[in-house]
Amino acid sequence: MGATSRPYRGVSASDRKAERRARLLEAGLELLGTEGFERTTMTAVCSAAKLTERYFYESFGGREELLLAVIDQIAAEVRDAVLGALREAEGEVADKARAAIRAFVTLLTADPRKGRVAIIESSASAPLRLRRHELLANFAALVVTQAEALHGRAALPQPRAEINALLFVGGLAEVLTGWLTGRLATTPEELVDAATHQFVTAMHR
Image 1: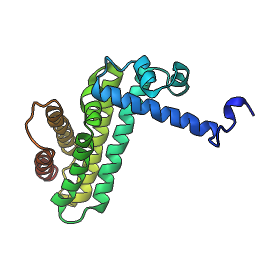
Image 2: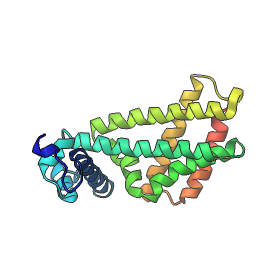
Image 3: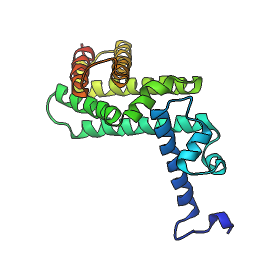
């Protein structure tokens, strides 16, 4: 067994590696969500995580790979929060839609770093923009699936369902951009109200 694979103070090598990766992801989130893309350099991330470049390359091939991982982590949190809210929600279609949308909006506004990364900084470079487009398409597909589950036979047929879902997701992202940048004077709950109304009226016949 090599020196790098031996337990240290009762912690396995794989657990130490996972902990270092988590620290780099947290540093990436903090910098990208507060300082922006240009200042989120590999050197800055390593400094914030209190790790050397050696450990950076242990987990990531470069800055873009780290930032993509940060975005993917937020997307996974959003998906889990939305699906969890849907599972627990009771009542009519509007009640269930509101619960899911509130989970989405709350996650990205309660921690504005996550909102800025997911909605704004994800457009800062070509690889990030590509991932942003992919994730928007994935969430639009999720909207279609949930609309079918909630509305049943009254759900929109394709391709109109996909078009309306993309309009819904893209519009919600734009509204959140306005809130995050201070251009839109509203509250997160007002965003939830407006988005719920949009979903209920736009995703069925």
